[in-house]
Image 1 (cartoon, rainbow, N blue to C red):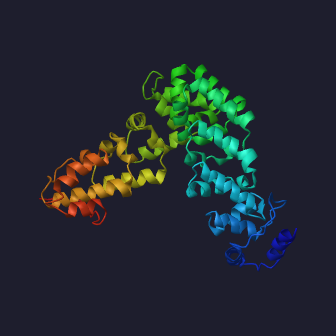
Image 2: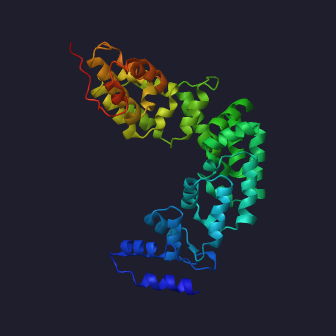
Image 3: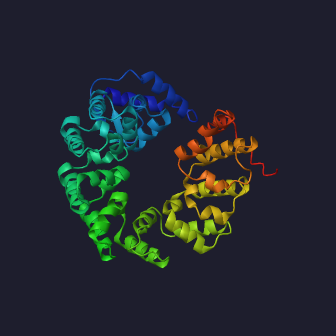
Length: 388
């Protein structure tokens, strides 16, 4: 009672326009001065400094702590139960970063009974060897009913996917898929996949590579089949499931928008569709991401747009961490005469980091030390000199 009144009185002292600074000062002052009674759900959206202070001690920023305390309506008057929750998570392998993510997404866990509510679920997930860092991305699983939700979901998925190894792989890719309800989401989605022509083996494989399909409505599933059929994709094509996975990640109409974006660079529809079939995840990248990479490859590297889209995997590479360092290294070697100026740059840029490093960096490191500096980002790419 006293702590609750204290929180309200402190709020009354806030001066308009200075709320943020005052909140930060209160948070610092209270960071190690908790009372010793209870942890509870707040009856209103009033902001209690002791709650904000505790959330900061969990690793949240002052701004994030204030937002969480207000929107989630929890009030921490004592750290005892919340500390027990954090200790339990650590016992089950949650790193500090995992706990921060968990608290930020599902702060109500801090007011949950650790022994009666959390431990049985943590034991169950541990028996399946689900990684704590993956559970931290879908922490509301820890407050769902074990008997009514989690166990029925696992039982259903085992019947569709098969062994726990496959189940674990599918979960690790889309942990939130386990939030789907068996009768409202999972079964209707699987039934829709069967009606559209996928056999059990294909459905099992699809759920392993994209368990998030379980959160997709049957109507949307049928629409995706029709969209893929319209661009000449058959369910017998080995690439079909990967294209389906990409389509599941797009909102209605987004596929056509990405098609229009790529065509704005002078590509034909056939070229873009072929690229999608080869590298379907390309269509999940943000528009700015695609445009920045294409503009760099066209304007700075002087590649042809048709050549780039014929090897769409290069658009999956990080511009800052992969493409630019490789260009810098190749530019140094070109200036030193170690590679020809008419080298096929696109082919040189492709491949994994081990192949590139072995072929162009380690091979010339002794003769041209600058190639190592360039590859490490210490010498910036200034463009290729194509004249002789």
